[in-house]
Length: 248
Image (cartoon, rainbow, N blue to C red):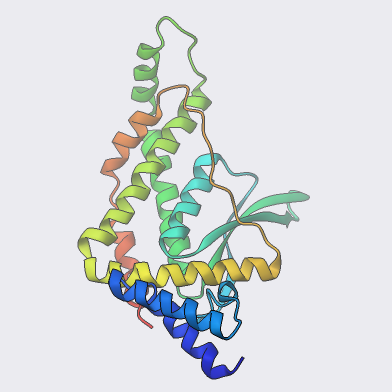
């Protein structure tokens, strides 16, 4: 297959992410026909339409991660077309291995993901510490005739509920405050996701799985409600240059 055909297929795949549905459908159909004509596996080209380099960077290292922490970092990573990996790192002071959360994505996106995820990680914990007495009382009232959940369970449910809210709010900010940028971003995020998946396949790496959670204390509803008060505009604004950079 000539380089000319390869380049044409890449351009058509890039157009297939267009926000114009008619243009996107036409570009994809044309790419499929061209690939079939020249005997090209179009799946192998997905992700190559993004020319930036994909690599890994530590987002956080600690003894262990809770479900709400993994969900938070993975959710933020996916907003920028990245993903999150898990691994181990030897801690010489402790004489044992710590767990690692590693962001995998484009060079300009990784620092933004780490900055936003770390900020939100800190804010949801502050929120729980501020409201934990009130939350425990509300949960206690809901379990007057049943077994009272442990304080640890209440904390974890509350934090997970807060994470769900802040991730939803982060996406809303992109959609409502920068609609034109968001449409451009959506197209390029898809390209980056393909590129990240190709990178993981080449390295034979599995990405972090979405966490499942059993909400038995009922505290998640209070976390979700209280987290509406977390301001993420400043942190999002810090990443605006990267968002505006979503134009090839």
